[in-house]
Image (cartoon, rainbow, N blue to C red; front, top):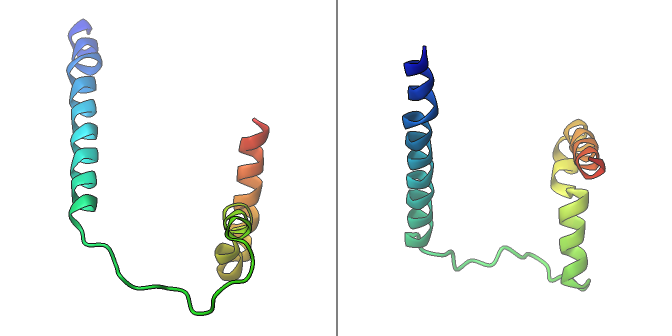
Length: 85
């Protein structure tokens, strides 16, 4: 039984950390090697300050609210409960 605990607690932990770090390194290199898009996705220029638009996007999640109102309600409840914790 001690051998099983040793296998679970020592080599498997090192293997999982190694796989995790290799995965992160591979993802970062893929992101760095891709070419950035040169397109501008704005259709109409906004007159409001950019920081206000960022706060609206971050805290009110307008795209989620537009597509799925039930998911939006549960997301707000979830994030508020995390803040209360």
